[in-house]
Image (tube, rainbow, N blue to C red; front, side, top):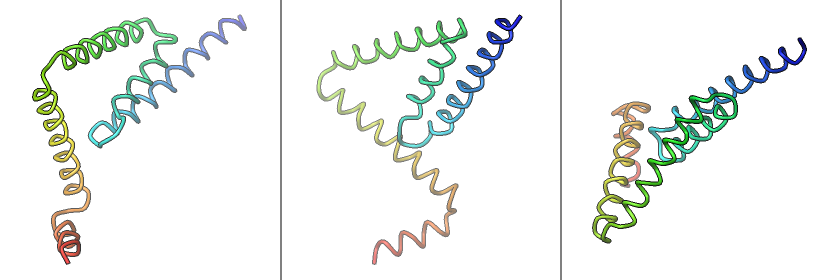
Length: 116
């Protein structure tokens, strides 16, 4: 009986801990930084206890490995193009986040201050 309670408690703790980590990572995805890495860490926590999470983590790691192999085989200009596209995406997300978070008027004030 005590072992069953221990097992259920462990499953609940892992579910909550993984959920908090995944939620935090997803909140950070639109910002520059390790959002997806944190999501994968949360998935790794879930994979300790849940088979579906283990399968999803294995699939995700395989796709990431395929991506790195593909990008490694590309010529330098393609790598530069992917890097520039990624930088433009991050810059756009940061600009949109600032615009939504601060508002257009406040951003204009900050821009004018920086130009002086």
